[in-house]
Length: 146
Image (tube, rainbow, N blue to C red; front, side, top):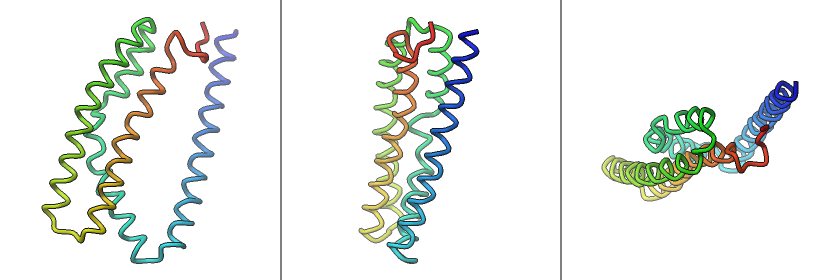
């Protein structure tokens, strides 16, 4: 019965956090759009969308694989975390390099290029957050239900 209670508690917590995150993101976008105006918000949106086109390269499914494998073998969480982190560092460097080459090749203004660099850095570092979450579900985690 405690496993079911833990499952329900975790599901409600995760759903609540997801809802709050979505609401805050919406409010942030409304605020940014109002503050920047049409043209500047368009540049911001382009930079974010352009960087996110390449964001999948820094993860390529490693997050889902890590979560699945940690769920099966919690005792190996530190080994998985180290290996996946090393792979993600290499993939992140490659992703940033691809973003830099492509955006410079397309000949956008310097202001837009810098915005794409910042958005690219965000998208790459964001791919690490789920890996840290997967690592936190391991045997040393305070959330462990065992």
